[in-house]
Every structure is written in C-alpha cells, then in structure tokens.
Amino acid sequence: MSLRSAVSQYFIAAVVFLALDLVWLGVVAQGLYEHFLGDLLADSPNAVAAFVFYAIFVAGLVYFVIAPAIEEQSARTAVVRGAAFGFVTYATWDLTSLAVIEGFPLGIVPIDLAWGTFLAATVSLATYHLWRRLT
Image (cartoon, rainbow, N blue to C red):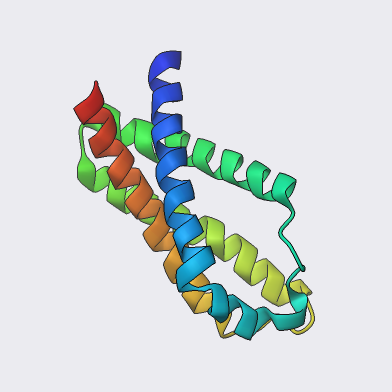
C-alpha cells in the first residue's frame, strides 16, 4: 500500500468515524452515559486524550481492516474484520474498566460493546466503498 493510499484511507475513515461517534455521544447516547456513569464522568471531555484515541483507533482500522479489505476487494472483509476490531477494542476498555474501577456499571458494557462493534464495521465498510469510488 502506498503512503498516498494509506493517508486517503485514514482521512476518509477519520471523517466517517468522527461524524458517527459525535452523533452517538452527543445526541443518541448522551443521557445513557450520564445515567450509567454519573459521577464517574468528567465535567468536560479531555480533548487531547479524545484526539489521541481517535487517531490511534482509526490508524488501527486502516492497518488491520480497511487496507486488507481494499487489497482483497472485499466489502465482506471490511464488515467482518471491522466488527471484530471494534468488539475487541471496546471490550478492552469496558472489561478492564469493569475489573478495576469501583462502581463501573455492568449495564453499560453490552451497550458499549454493541456500539463499538457497529461503529468499526460501519466505518470500515463506508471507507472501503468511498475509497474505491474516489480512486
């Protein structure tokens, strides 16, 4: 994969990921997280930490999911690997939090795992199709 391809895949995936996650966090699930996490939530998000998370997560999607799907010319690969990547990465956060943060609510775990799985699969598939259409 050329650097130009990697950068364009990254840019597309980042835009799609950011748009979907902001709608989820800011509109759809805002009350949900407040309900489950309550006092555990910061008054305002740490923008630097959020940026670093997005940057690393999207890089992982491109490297482990999107680029292989494009190379194989397989939308199925984008969806299946994207879903697996999202599930594993969100499980890492949720289950580690459940293990080490006193009062971390079990009820948010399946919701967050479902969101991460859906989000990564959707971003991977959308990036796959957009990249193929634009190149």
